[in-house]
Image (cartoon, rainbow, N blue to C red; front, side):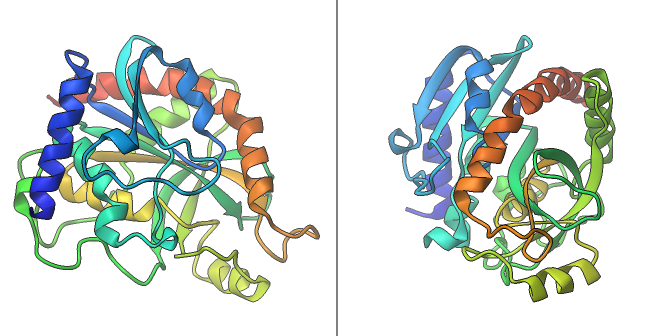
Length: 287
């Protein structure tokens, strides 16, 4: 069975489980941020293990299931956890969930992650809007044969495609509006992705700052690339869970990442509750 056929089989299974819900928006939750799915009304939990060919998360803080339902009255699919290249998965496996979501009918996605803060003035527990990214993972998930049938909208699925707005300018504006309504300012940063799993050295952090990065992590960029290939609009939100190596006297740990994520979950849930209806209105206007 080809990769495309596996995606179609998984998406058919997912659509069958979702029934009449048919969400057009998906949220991917990063390390320590999974409990936000508890805000979903009339939830339909679907463990990744039940979805054909779906990769299984092995990282603490990633529950490994899709929770579908409604948030602020809007149909939504939430991924509690993702898989990473450093877990031993191939680029095709890492981006398989995004392919499945796109073929299920998703037209916009909010990708969240835990990130190390490189930018001046960042603090642990701060939410930062991703304005752009730098792919420093050493690979691109689209290497290999192009599959135009993955296009989620006309004009997508091209071998070579524009990434000027990897993160939708319209969605970023709506996210800032939602944050203001929640009573805080959403700063914008540049996310740089590395393969991991080791954290960066202080020398590497200094080098990354010279490249213009303000956030560093081990995910999100492959999903963004694949989503844009399919014609799915992307918004990205990082939770600064720690200051990167050399910027804080404390050693880095995954426990610290999860704890910082748990502390900011309520703020992220409030932001998403205001943001998701705005995305839905945006998609309706584009239809």
